[in-house]
Length: 303
Image 1 (spheres, helix red, strand yellow):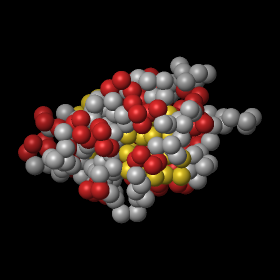
Image 2 (cartoon, rainbow, N blue to C red):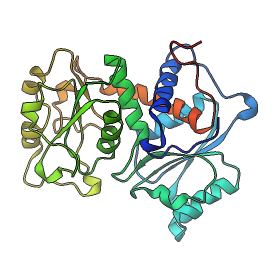
Image 3 (cartoon, rainbow, N blue to C red):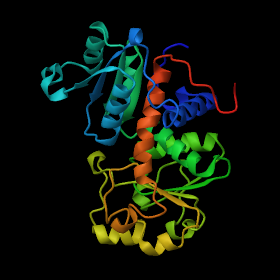
Image 4 (cartoon, one colour):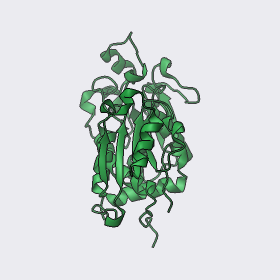
C-alpha cells in the first residue's frame, strides 16, 4: 500500500473507513502488542498549534505503542516566533528525516498550504473545518454499540457553527445512511445542517452527541448563565429520562460539566464519553498504519 495523508473524511472511501474501524477493533484484542517491524521504525512529530489533551496524547500513546520514534513540537520555542511560515516549519521536519507528521492548527484547511510536502500528514483538527480522527472514533463507538450505521438516528447538540466534529461526523454518517439532526441556539445554526428542537428530538435519537461552546473560536452566549444554557440546550436529567432505553450519550470532550450536560450524567449508564477516549487511541493507531502504507489486518469474515 502507498503512504497517504489523512486530512479530511473525503480522503477516505467507505471501504477504507471500514478498514480503519476493523484495524482499530483488532488493536483492542488480538493485535494489541503489534508494532511496526524494527527495520521500518518511523520518526514522527506532533505539531500542535492549539491546546489539546485527548487528541494529542492519544496520538502519542498510539505512536509509542506502534514503536514509532516520537517528538512533540513546541511552537513557542520554535522559529514560528520569528515569523517562519507553517509551510517552512513543516518543510524543516521533512528535510531532516521525519517520515510522518500529526498536525493540529487553528486555521481552517491549513493543509492547503502544504501541497509541496511529500511525507504523510494526519490532520488532528483544523479550525472549525475537519477532525477526521475524532470522526473515526465516533464511528467506532456507534458501530460497537449498534453493529451498523444504516438508519441510526444521531442528534448533535450545541455549538454546531464552530464545530469541526459536527462537520466531519455529518459527512461520514450520512455516507453510511445514518440520519443526522442538529440542535442548539439559533445563533449557531449552520447552513446545510438540519436543525430541530432538542426536546422534540431527544426521544427520536439513538445517539445524543453533545458539543461544548467553542469560546476560543468566538462562540458566545452572553445572555445565558451556565445553568440557563443547561436548562435550554443541554442534557438535563429530565431529558435523559426521555431517551430511548438503548440510546447512548457521546461527547468529543473536553466536557463542560453543568453546561452542555448535567455533571451526574457524564458517567451515567448511557454515557460512552470515556469509551470514546479509549477508542481514540485505537483509531489513531489504525490511522497511522494507513498513513504509512501498512496493509490492514484481515477484515472480519475474510480469510
